[in-house]
Image (tube, rainbow over all chains, first blue to last red; front, side):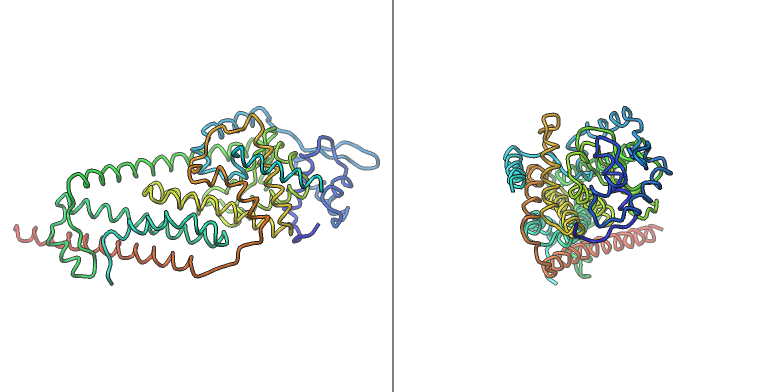
Length: 121
Length: 320
């Protein structure tokens, strides 16, 4: 993968994001494969152990090593709080820095077409 | 220097007119800084301008005093008809109400965002993942006075992470990180307060909202080294968020100006195009114009206040 090198904090975030995106526990090898091959196995392994020590992930034996999955905390409370945050809608969008906001129908169609083109390439 | 007393209004109108043009033509980070600086200066100038008119019209400042101020290089402020004065008072009142509303809304959103981070996060990790299926992603700036190396935290939902592939997730994280590192929330806060004081600055606020997103998109594209992946991340996230539950739940405040509502498609298109060249001159001119206006207005206000106090003192002395 091209681009600049990641700092260890950035790598931690990226590995956490990978674990969350997966619907099953991941071994260090699977995490490394998902992130791009230029990472050393040992780097990924070290960060996973660090995340485990911090209580951010849990692990289960898998083959000769472990498979890791993120620890889910307070899902119900999180859902309530997210609802509270977003229920004010437009007013609060001026304060929130959201990645994306709502789409018009025309935009939605255009973006869907773009993504279809990409997949068929 | 030949200036008119109405310059603060003209500058605000000018900003309203050219904000969309600047947003479309200039590299986003630079254009945002220029619009933020110019909006802050214009808001200060127009507020001082309204207060001065009011002081003169209410008889707090005599015409003689206005003439003295004008003689010392300030503007001559004439009293205005009662109808206009009433409009000015209600305008200032409405501005105050709006500023208070913005303050309260900001405090509330900040509190709610941090509560969500506390619920879902462990310690002070950069990435906080909320176990929620709908795709959302936010940059959560560190609270005022709290020093954090990354400038804050990134809050995303599981739904967002699952909608994207590994490269796109990297683009998303780089985008949110750019908001935090570049302190974009401060730029947005300044234009929000400016627009609350002076509604003529609403187009500038919308433009800055769009520009900081564009600046973060460019940052992400540079970090991951692939503009197309950054564009696909944006398009995928937007489509995932447009599922029936989240569709058209309300039109964002700036939708009338076509930024928030059409922002994503424009941002995707901008990432597909080549980056805009860095131009220094137009933003510098804009900042200079707004600064000169603000300085001139505040100079007049200062003289008016100083002479009023002096005159009041003389009246007191004469009375004894």
